[in-house]
Length: 89
Image 1: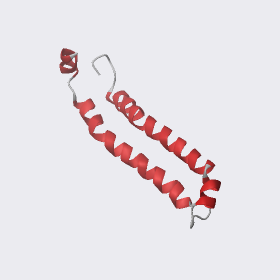
Image 2: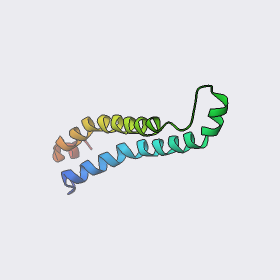
Image 3: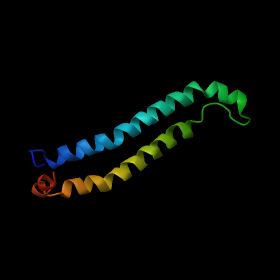
């Protein structure tokens, strides 16, 4: 904000930085689970078909946790006085 960014710019940057790795991890995990599904059904007793609830709710829960974890740093970043931040740099 000290160099002209608006609070919404700071918020979008912080959320992008926090949720980017979480989204990448969810994408890799989903691709891996779909790719290894056939192997797991043969090796693990009791695994039947693709579980829709697991494929939807687990990634959604992980993204919610990542969003919740980024709220506190986001609020702190938006409350910092730009002059104070520049002094410490």
